[in-house]
Length: 287
Image 1 (cartoon, rainbow, N blue to C red):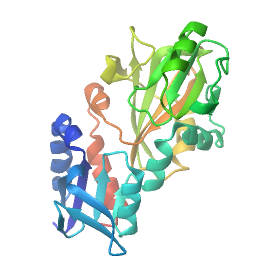
Image 2: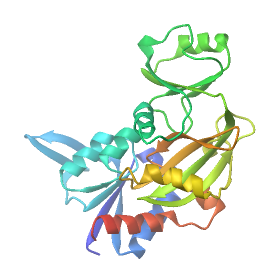
Image 3: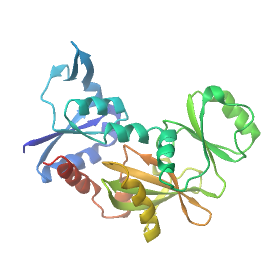
Image 4: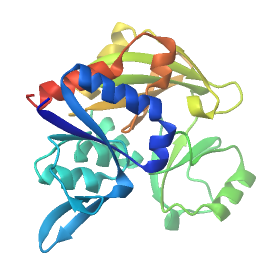
């Protein structure tokens, strides 16, 4: 096996995702690639003696041909890229997918339908709400359905206003939106792998990890055409593109998950997304 890759996780996430990591490493091996789990805490990165440097366990090591980064740290992606390592997802994708305001800005330029969305800094918030109730407030760098708040009235807004500590937020209208329901589309490169419908009967958020359910979702021709407008525009590795559903069943762009998991897709289908991902890495890296 000539090609070597690093699969970078935080220690905590590596423990939680052990079976996924084992699956990833096995799939790489089946396709002739050596993939090694590397814990982020064991990497030292920076500028040492005026040179971009990476130590692993405080030692200089042979750098990999590529790295799959499963932490949210765009600067790490960028530093590895600058040292000649192919990185998935790229620093540019990691940067804009993990900034909700920036994501909406870019996707809006493609004329993709979305709910009314306001970008705001904490210091500019007023006790007078920026749009009619109800609305949702999200921390700009939140993920996994966390740091998301449904505000129904002035009392709830006043409480949120007093407690919020995040410095950058987005505020989104919930008019004409089916709360507790969304569609996640799994993408590798510029290919749609599959989609799931996520629903919750007890929460306005539909995330699987928060107790929501998932079923296979068959995308129609118009939905695929909409999604392809997004995935043809960006150089994705593997991402999840999330859509809210309006009251007429139409799709409204919501966000793009950079470090996306695939347990929902595996639960409702026989799609082997990691086989697709490893094959994509081989093709894009000319391995």
